[in-house]
Length: 335
Image (cartoon, rainbow, N blue to C red; front, top):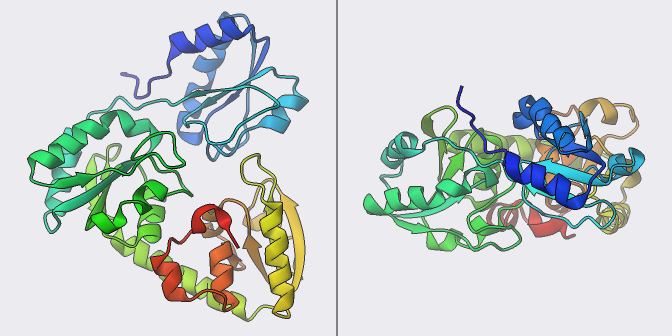
């Protein structure tokens, strides 16, 4: 079976030898977990002890620094993302795991869905940036004007991650619609909510193209219902994420102060994993404001879990229309 992702095996081996690493912690996102034993074997053949982190890895902000320190690892090998946060305690080497899948057929299908629009914004995730020029060429040949955002906070032009769509936001006034190249619905739903433009997905894993807009509208309705339910709450938990690139104590303190000013009770909660089971252990808390990764708020919770900007809407500090038009995730969780 042909390998889908480029694991850069030669570079991995060279990095271990060059750095003289003795104990290496490996981080793999869910889609690359099947490669864990291959990566571990390469590292051990290069002379280092390999330990695979079995905890979830949600992005480049989710570096396993405390885990590496507790295991006395002298290097983290992080697959599937590009550098987003600096690590001063344990060195981190990134392997982007670019996908080696043809995109021609699915982009041709996407072109039919893009017919109503001439000016198209093009975005993708790190795995598919190697196909960006090819896709841009196909769109140009079809008569489309293609715009790609500059790198901004990201490593590469056109790159988006689950909580940061600045590359798309920087060009949204120049285009009529967006084409997302990649897999799954997580990234394109976040993109479309943040930029509020028609969004077509060219899913190279499913081998088909589709509009994400109906799912986006359903998500927005769900978020409004969440805000409305939270308005009725008096006792809030303010969530502080403990993951390396997600901790924002200052924002949490400002949110707590604002809730108290609005005659709400607020309790600060610090946690690494934010899920429904954990939050239900605090039955007296009726709703939560998440100051960590904003996309976590979109998970399945029995109680309202708001992003910072959604909390500002709930408290009357931000108009709903401004949330819709001004970037849903608030460019770095400003309060």
